[in-house]
Image: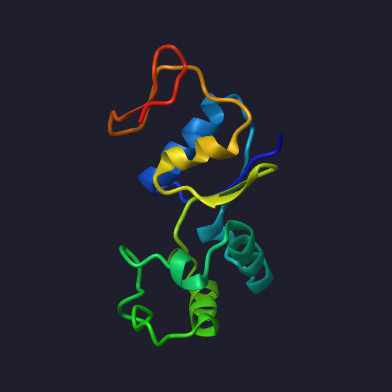
Amino acid sequence: MQVVIHHNPDCGTSRNVLAIIEAADYKPTVIEYLKTGWSRPQLEGLFAAAGLTPREALRTSKSPAAELGLLDLAVDDETLLAAMIAHPVQVNRPIVCTAKGVKLCRPSEVVLDLLDRLPPGPLAKEDGELLIDAEGRRVG
């Protein structure tokens, strides 16, 4: 199964998701969207597939959303999409695509729903939170 991750290596959640994917023995296509940027059709397709609106996909912390006035609920989807294209960091991450669907993987264990197989356990996040126990079962 092909796995694509829209990834920011500076984000702990994104690193955790990539580590989970790789621990499950997938060779994902990694798209560092801060380097490549976004296109409008790409964002619209990802959001539609994930069942997200631009507002739901907007990164509101550690981004210029507040300075750009994007937190105001009166800001429309067109404006949000334009801001996301101009400032790729505005898109919350990581977004993962597999044959099982597309999801914004926050928290990082959401990615397990998109994989055909789980990584062997035990497996923990960077912060030590256990995701897969020693018997290979999901925790939580």
